[in-house]
Image 1 (tube, rainbow, N blue to C red):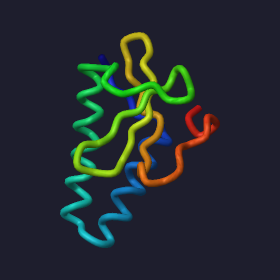
Image 2 (image 1 turned 120 degrees about the horizontal axis):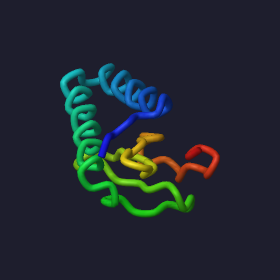
Image 3 (image 1 turned 180 degrees about the vertical axis):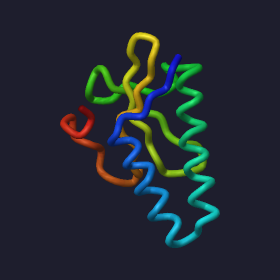
Image 4 (image 1 turned 45 degrees about the vertical axis):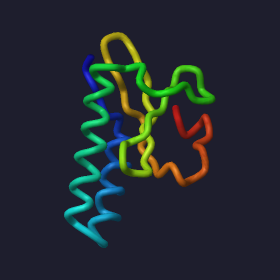
Length: 97
């Protein structure tokens, strides 16, 4: 399946990278690589994640890091809609639209 990153998800990844870069540039690159690798895995296995409180949205953790990727499975496409630190509160349904 094709993997597409919604504008919000692209912005989330850029903010995560910027935040980590201020502390450890090498680590920032590794985190983004792992996020992208998780996205590629979803392209091969779109049902890897678990269902969220919003029926059409699934979530998967990024291995080794506290980030969660929220996504939707459509016709031939997985859309990553939001990437956030899993230590934060669970997003509201409005945040996942």
